[in-house]
Length: 237
Ligand code: URA
Image 1: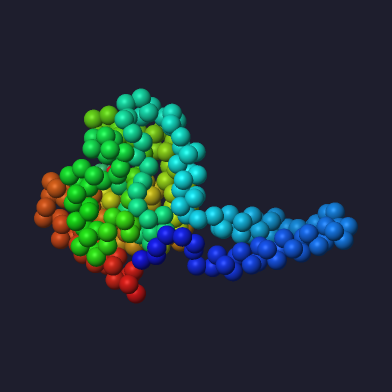
Image 2 (image 1 turned 180 degrees about the vertical axis):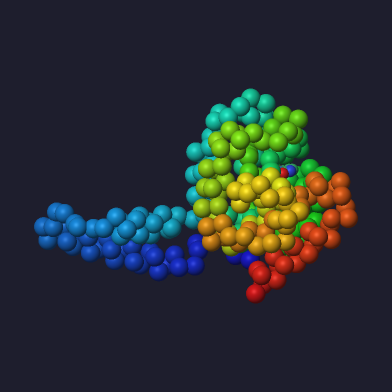
């Protein structure tokens, strides 16, 4: 499992960026004032620069952009924004639905009863909460734990998108109907989605049942373990 810090290829990108800057400086000194540079190349250069920032810095920047978020009505009753926790360089991200009572109180995802079960699942995978990243589709608790409304998801989704952009995980485990359907933009039921592998912008997505559902239906734990075994064997391959 990757640790925190720079990503593979950073040294190479840094060298390319420095050489590009040297060349541009040299050309400017030689009197060149304009460049016929295609958009595509400008994007590559911009990305070289962007990729030099660490995932941890990108997440911190994203969290500060979220600020004391008032983008939707959930801000009125929340206690804490529950942004996410874990390794910014994680290969595996767990995405749940939204904070419940305990998460809202503590500002950390999956710390209540369902969270304790998720922690057990992670540990059964021979991982720790610190080695993965855990977050939710929405960052504030819906009153009475109701399902998030479409306008709330719309307001919050860019921040999940930003988290995935920063972390660049290889795998996402989508926990439950809501996370799976939102991430995969589908209305297929979780019973049909679970255990199958999907692709989200190059990230492999494995939906499985939500731990809160497992607390009500313990006989489904076997299915989740099958899904996690598939995930582990792909990650180890
Ligand atoms: N359920 C979720 O979907 N997310 C949490 O953080 C806690 C419970």
